[in-house]
Amino acid sequence: MTTPQPTLSQTTGAGLACAVIARATLRAHPEELAGLRNQLTLPSGVPIPAALLKHSDEQTIAALAAVLRAMSSAGLDDRACVDWTVLAAPRFLGRQALAHTLQRYAAEGAWGISPHVIPHRILHAVSGTISLALQIHGPNFGVDGIPTSSAQLLTTALATLSDGQVPGVWAVMTGWCPEPIPHHAATPAVNGQQRPALCGAVALALAPLRADWQGWELRLLPPVISHGPGKSNGQARPLFSLESFLDARTDDAPSAGAEWRLCWGGSLELRDGRARPRQ
Image: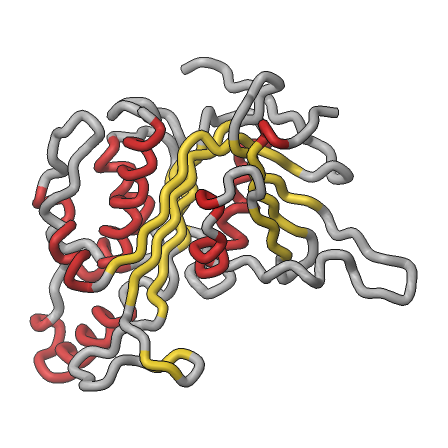
């Protein structure tokens, strides 16, 4: 394994930064995810074994589909990320499956529970399945699992890259909005409006930021508090979440990028480095 280059930003005053070498987003209905389960292929065209994904959660399918889409768009081959770290932040993974499992347990006891529930519906199932599909040998783990986990995912990814021990990180976030309600006639309502249940996924391939990098950058910046009568300069920015990233539509205006504030202070920036003057 080659020694990774250190990031440009190492100090707390300047924040942390990394290169975004590939990225993709996805929003899919439950029916679309059911179709993807047996249709995902590696960038080389080799199909993902059906047995690997047979019992996977829908969020796992969405996450892997987003990763493969990002690899294809960036021209990464099947073995490009073999030594990387995989971090995943699913939101309430396995909630429906667990509800069904508890009902089966109450009615039938332990014999009514599938042995596949635990390995495929726990927090680390998404990152583990991605690692198996891509034959990645680096560490993998889930991050939190609640609505704020997306922000924790990216701060964890930046911290992982900052010590120079890994060549890259797959940072993947997933979640339903709104969550589907099984056997329910009406579509769940969001802000008083009926909307179809969609599973969203974001996949980011992050690497140490080299001085000659000419592409997208992700930056974690510390809080900047105004000492005057106004509020902090980050208050106008939207709060970072899976949905705010999916809605940013940075591909429509690549030079503009996007900025978000974090609930514990500071901010995240996604910027095209070619549009930013070098210091």
